[in-house]
Each structure stands twice: as C-alpha cells, then as structure tokens.
Length: 419
Image (cartoon, rainbow, N blue to C red; front, side, top):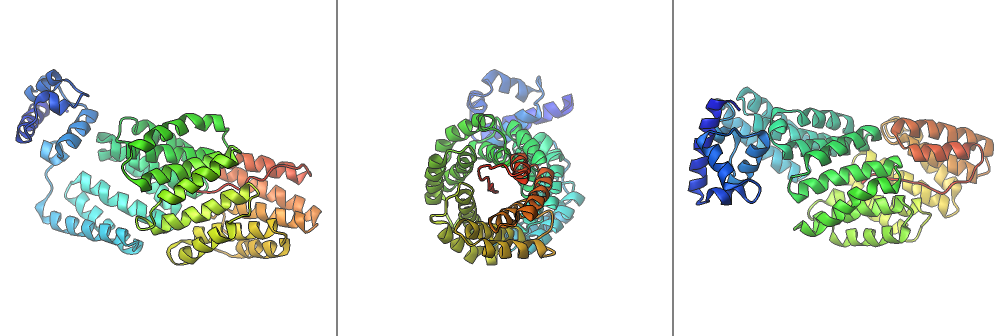
C-alpha cells in the first residue's frame, strides 16, 4: 500500500468505524492500540495485508470498499453473483457437477470484472467440487494455485483454507509428502486465524502425518493444540471432526483404548444432517481403524451403514476403501478365500485398481490373503509389490513392514486410513 492509498484507506476506515459506533481502541480489539488505529486513519501509517484482513473482519468490509481493488465492471456483476448463488446451492445439495459448472462460469465473470475476491471464492468452490467428485489430483492443483492467489496473499484465512484443501486432496491422492508440506504451511498461515480455520489446518496436518507413519511424538504438539481448540468451537459437529482426527492418531500410536473412546465421541458429535457423506465416511474409516488394530467387533455393522449410503453418495475412492475393509474383515474372520476374491476383483478393475486409488493398500491385503492361504512364495512376491507401491504413496511405515514380511518377519498390523 503506497502513501496515497494509505490516506484513502485511513479515510474509509474512519468513516466505517464511526458508522458502527466504535472507538479507535474498540476497533483495535486488544490486538492493535487506539493510537495505532489513529495513525492509520490519518494516513501516517500504512496497513499491512494482515492488518487489512483483521480490520476487514472487524468491520465486515471487502477490498473494493477499502478502495484497494479495482472496481468491477457492472456488466459482469449480475452473472457472477447469480452463478455463485447457484453453485453454492448445488454444493449444499451435493450436486457437484452443477456446482463446478456454475462456479467455473462465476470465476470467468469475476476475472473479467477484475473482482479478485469473487474469483477466489468461485475457484474454491470448483476445487471443493473436484475433491468431492474424487478428482483429488485436480483438486490439489487448484487448491495450490488458490494458495498463491492475490486474495490469499492479502487474507491469511483464504490462504489457510486453500492450503488445508491442498493438504487433504494430496493425502486423498496418495501424495503424503506433499500433504504434510501443505498441512504445515496451512497451520502456519492459520496461526492467528479463528479457531475453526486453525482446527481445519491442524487436522489436515495431523491426519497426513499419522497416515505417513510419523512417530506419535511428532504429531503430539499438534494434537495438544487441537485438544485445546475443541472447547472453543461452537459446533458439536466441528468438535466431532477433531475427535475423529484424534481417534485416528491414537490408533496409529497403538493406544487402542483411547482410539475407541475418541471414536465413540466422534460418532456422538458428528451430525449426518450437516454432511451425510462425511458421516458415512466416518463409519467406513472407523471400521478400518478397528481392523488395523485386529478388532472385528462391530466392524460389519459399521461397514453396512457406510456401504448403504456411499454406494449412492460416494465416489470410486470410497468404494475402494469399503472393498479393502470387506476383504480385511473376511481375512480376520477366517475367510481368506473370500478376502482374496474381493481384493483381486478390485485390483483387476481398470478404474478401481488404478495407482491413484490407494493401490498399495489393496496390494498389501492381497499379500496377507495369499499368506493366510499358504501360498507363501507368491505372498512374498506380493509383499514386495505392496512395499514398492506404498513407498510411492509415502506410507513409509507400512512399506517397511511389507518389506519385512517379504522375508518372513512377523510385524503388527497397520491398516491405516483416510479421514
């Protein structure tokens, strides 16, 4: 912001503050002094992007109102606004194709109108739609681009949201190294953001670290921050998301009792009316965590609940996770032949058996089934295949276990999952 913009910004700031009946100290909200606000209003100080973001939240103003973004062409405003409304409505009804179509149109109109805020918002809806449709790699690419968007550079909340989505999408597409990197950047960007934004960033990082097999003590500082944030969230559903994430970390750390406790807590707090697909995925991942710990009790019911809904609302990736769990359950309950048939069908499917569909997990279950069937030489070769694919996906602890099993060493089960 140059000197002329600082004077204009200060004038707008003073008028907006007075309209809302706030003193300079009240506007500062304990973060900035009344004297500093006075200097901003007089143009003697220039506001950094972080200050602009803070004051925008306090006053409910946009960049256009501050005079920091070019005024949009009125010819494009109607189309942008209407397409965004339709996209948001479609997203709320999980009509992802319509959400993507209208959000893409809104983004084009916003870009033509030089409306950076609405362009970012529209493209974020597109990225979310791609993710929900199972196009994880494209969602990750879009989220990465949004993290460097002009709006993300000015508003840390926008940057944190984009980075969190990039982390989640990379984790879903089995690029765990990237997922951790984006998650760490999201936590950094969200450090001064509202609790709900920081919680999302922390959850993305913790989930990626757990799935990649990082030592529990590496995740513990972030888990402690999540636990401290949970009481500050106003939504039971949001607290349920934190319990879900922490449950997975507990299972990975080998604290099965705590994992089951947090799993039950998450089940009580998550609201299917808020996001039915998410609620169904919780049942699917809860089953996988139990299976990874060698627990079969209650798993069949969890999988049945998840399967009934995800067959309709889910994507191909959801189907693969369900089939992997069904094969694992069959194996643990003495039906290695049934487990082999289920997982072999997944691997042989040209779509469901693709490398982007967590193929390493499927290869690993297949190896375990072969071992249980007494096909030891074939099982050893299959463990090598699984280890190589798990390395590519970044599941290093599972890869090491698979290598060890390929030479006949016994290891504990480690059937990790996505959240």
